[in-house]
Image (cartoon, rainbow, N blue to C red; front, side, top):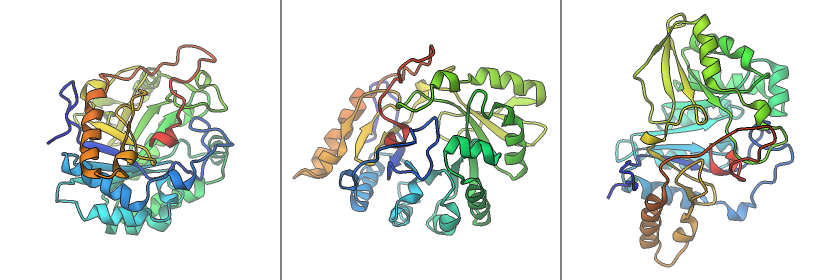
Length: 330
């Protein structure tokens, strides 16, 4: 039986987090002194695999592996290989989102396992800005990872979080750089998830303003292209490339939501911006796991909300949710 929520939206897309750990400390994502989960709380490889298969059996056709940074998990490639064997057998696409720092070592293995496209998070091409944002000097490794992924035949989409006064002036150059290498680029509004050292009101720049500025520089035409995610795309005439916008704050996109997220501890969040949760780890570890898992998935569909309620209304406002994106799965 397919996964269908109370608003008759069919869930075909699972974002499965394999770790909350990350080798960067991006200022909009987590504090410098982030506390990570004890390893004993994290699902093991077999449990992650069993969960993924349960979702495939209920009609999920696309799985994105996330984190934290998924490639810092040592047995990550084993999971990719195991899930890759289901491509063409219920699973249509297996992909991942990565910060790119570990990509050079894993690109060939990902491609061999059946991954065809990936998202790489990159907010700047300036080394000093990268260090200030990520609190780590990793731009060279990221660019080497992107080059290795392209050489392995992986299609890459760059994800860029737009931050007021930090990288907004770089957006045209990032577009031209990405499109010049045959990569799409998607711009994302900063999301109020988890407490960070910075004030998100200071970081937040509505993409409506960014789009207006880009309209003065480029010829943007609406595109019918969709990837199954929340991005809405335009074609850029001057570069011949595609540009996406993810706007959780300025333009709600929940009516077509087709996805759920599962954390590395097996907590299913039907909505990134909601507090609803179902414990799949408890179901997996119960005496009658198959039955418990079916019931848990049905419960998740019953509580999936119609929409999120993200908001950044004023300086100093508390985050909408206490959990960080690295815990939920990006």
